[in-house]
Structures are given as structure tokens and as C-alpha cells.
Image 1 (tube, one colour):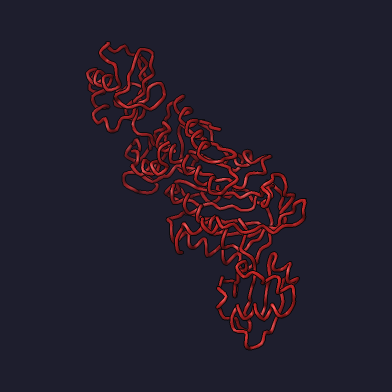
Image 2: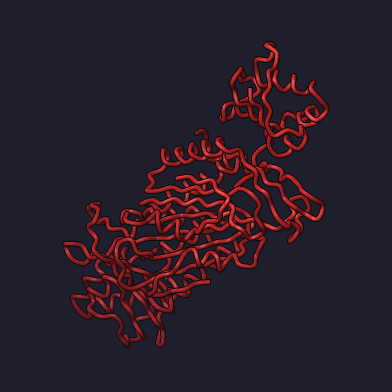
Length: 83
Length: 83
Length: 154
Length: 154
């Protein structure tokens, strides 16, 4: 599973992109985030307030209950500020 | 009094601009139009349907009850179609 | 700023000039009106060969300035421009340009929309279209009055 | 058409290209977003030295295409264009261009406004502003969500 972080989520996790193999118990976005938070303080900081986190799976917006599986591209980022 | 006609009001009256001296009994736009209608068939045709006539006195929109006096610039035209 | 002219204009250049040196501007909205070739009575395309825009010199400038003032009173704007052409124009040619600049996106959109709606019902221009059946004065559309009404009393 | 690019663009030229050869178009609405120098936290002018726009390549294009399709389903349009830049930009530089062309004036205005509102809440771009206090990620504004909501479910 490829996981991408943008804007201040990238600054806080210290990672732009990583290939991860979460345990089988991780089946949704929410479970992926819970698992990431255990990986270190940077992740815990990045995901401290989930109201500021948006998620896309395979480049489509999804909510936290959306399934994630092997081969997915999961992106985590703050609300967008383009335009 | 200078009287101007635009668009099809000009075509129908056959006049773009004329200097007129209406009788003293002409005190409003409506009275001016009534007097013009008596001047000939072109005017009668131009003013046959007053719902299609707009009037400006001294380059400001007015309604038919607006006064007209010596020295005024009175313009008669159809609803505008610019833009 | 308002301009009433026979000559064409360059919308990109006009926008560039308005934004120049003012870095408080967040956005600019523009509208360009073009000569259509559709016959307004039959709805048939490619029917209009050319169009002549007649106007009322003096009153046109007065009305456009009044409309521009109204927009600036109503919205917080960093710039407004109205250019309207007169004379003979061919299908595809530019007739009118409205540009508004503001700190706020919606103010730019709304004021530009307002200026176009008002111009359509208040600026003394009349279109004479050359069609295969001869010259036809374009009728005013009730929808333009309705469009202006949505901005309320001004 | 959509384009995501580092390079600047020429709004006038883009409009010209869209109108070319289609004399059914009655009007074109455009919006150009510019880099402001105002500090978003303090409201102070001339505080932003530069801005870097980060984006999510791949998803950006997908989202912009989706937004463009929505606009074309909703309005009768003769052309739509969205150009969004990324990378480092200075105050006064162009960020985004939206152009819509239609037979009908209000369709051009509304679809351009819709595209900008949707782009503001859906296109994956993030602004990092360089201020005297260092780099600051710009916060999303609730008003942008409200602006998008006015177009209803899409």
C-alpha cells in the first residue's frame, strides 16, 4: 500500500510517500490512521485532529470508514487551499 | 427643445434629431408625444405602442409624466439592446 | 473606468493593466460579449451577416458611469472597467468587456454580473442585425429586465 | 479543457482560442486568481513574500476533469477551460484561470462561478506562504465550503 502525505501532514510525519504493509487487522482508513499513530510521535501529531484531515483512496475522496487494501494509493492531506 | 430619435423610432419618424418649438400647452413628455403624433404618419407609427418607447430628458431616464421645457434635450428610443 | 469606442480592445491587456502594482487583488472576473450569428427571431445559426450598434453619445457615458458607481458602492472593489463598442461588427467580434477586481472572489463575480445585467437594460445601445431578410432591429428581451431585477433597487 | 502547469498563462489568448470559429457564442466569463500579499492570519498587507503551491499530481487532474464535466452537464456551454499553476509564485502572479463560453450570458457567469467554488474545495492544492515569520500553510476557509454548498448536490 502506497501512502502519501501532503502540506503540513507531510511536514509533521516527515514523509512525502511510503510503501507500507499494515497488518491484516487494518481494513479501513480509520484503522490505518490508528495504526500509523502508533508508529511514532510525528504521525500522532499529524493525526491529532482528524477534523483537519482529508483522505483520498486511489485519488478519489473517501471518508474514514472507507476500506483500504493491498495495492491501494492512500493520500492524507489538510483541507485544500488552491484557486 | 432638441428632440432625438434612435433605432426604429428614428427609422419610423425619418428624423435623427430636430429642433422643435412646441406650443406652451406641451408641458410633459406625454403631451410632447401627443403633439408629435399630430405632425405626421411617421410619428403616429413610431408612437403607436408606447410600451415600446423609452424617454430620456437631458440624458436621464424619465417617465411620460416628466416635464419638458425650452432648452431640454429629449430623446425617444426603444428598449435598449446593447451588451 | 469606462470607454465607449468603435475600436476593438484586448481583454488580456486590460486585465493586466488593472492588476498592475496592486497585490491586494485576489481575483478578477471578466465578461466579454461577442456578436452571435444566430437570427434572434428564427433561432437559425449563421443567419446574421453583420451587426451595427447605434448608441446615444453623451447619455451612454453617463449611464455607464452611473452603473459603475453603483457597483463600487455595493461591493469592495479594487478596480472596474467597462468598454462598449459601437459601429459595424461582424459575427465573432467583441462587443463589450466588463472587468472587476477585488480581494474577494465572490465580490468580483457578483459585481461583474451586476454590471452586465444593468448595462443590458440601461445603457442606450441598439443592435441592427443584417440578415438575408434585410436589417432587423433586435428586440429587447424580458429576461434581461428580470436579470436586472434580481439585484433589487439601486 | 484542463491544464495543471508551473508556467504562466495568457488569459486573453486563452479566451481568443476558445471563441475562435464558434460564432454561436454570445459571451465568455473568466476568472483569474492572483497571489495576494496579505498575511492571512493578521490581515496585514505586503506581508507575503512568495507562495509555493503544492499539489497532488494525478488526483488534481482527475478532480479538475470531474468538476469540468459537472459544469458541462449542468449548463449549456460552448467551451470550458481550467488552468491551475503549481510551484513558487510571487505576489501579483496569476494562479488560476477559469473561462466559460456560452450562448447565454448567465450560463457563462454561473458556470464560471461554480467551477471556481468547486475548485476551491475539491482540487488538491495547498498554499505555503513565505512571511517574515517563516513559512505558513494557509488554512482552508469555511466560507469556501459555504460557497460550494450554494450549488447543491452534484
